[in-house]
Length: 345
Ligand SMILES: [Zn+2]
Image (tube, rainbow, N blue to C red; front, side, top):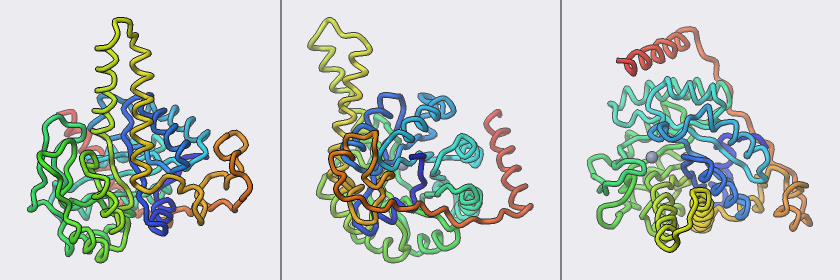
């Protein structure tokens, strides 16, 4: 199946009250480990490529591998730009073939965040790509080594969230509710009352960034209140690193390819475990079938063990097409040019 956007998947997650894991890819070992886990769990999956990881992974370089693997996969796969920081990066991801983008202007003033996000939504929806954006500020750094603590003054404000969703037309909202990227300093304290309030006011799928370090019980509670996508990376990377370290310590005869293989197997285990906690394991078998083959996949042993129940395949709905006006188009172009000029000093 080719790559899909998040809209139908998040709707399915909403109907069945689970969350879809979004796992960052920084090498082929991550890509393979995550996809093997998704297939074994029969779970939809979101592959994140974060702009802060562009030093590790060139998107144009890894895209063909991701597309090839997604086409072969018997579960729905989303390729998502994680924390796109400029319109230029979003355009680059769209040109590359990403099926979802997250645009993050959360550090900018509200009006500017709304204006830029709205433009991204118009642009992405016009080519069938879904959009997530962030309001409030999720602190810490993706995969960062320094632990961080959430600051209440940066929590998402429900009034602003309602306006933000209404005026931008986004498909999912990343919120700040006590979560931080990377490791937590002390115990994470999610504000469950705020999650419920944000869900009620916005009525769209909510996204929890900074999943590493949150307890299984807190995940389950946050998901029961409306979190439909969970970003998870730092802990997965840390556990794979620890495993490689153990291997190095226990043997004098380790080759790099053995270490990479072990890292991939560890990533797979971690992702499978998270999918169980997020409730997305076996989601392909739930009513409103999202399995790309409707359980009739001929190339996949997992589907073939369970072909008694052949259900119609959910037809992915294209996003509502939006026309871009000439003015908006020139606005996009001038912003991209200014992003490039800024980057080049
Ligand atoms: Zn994030």
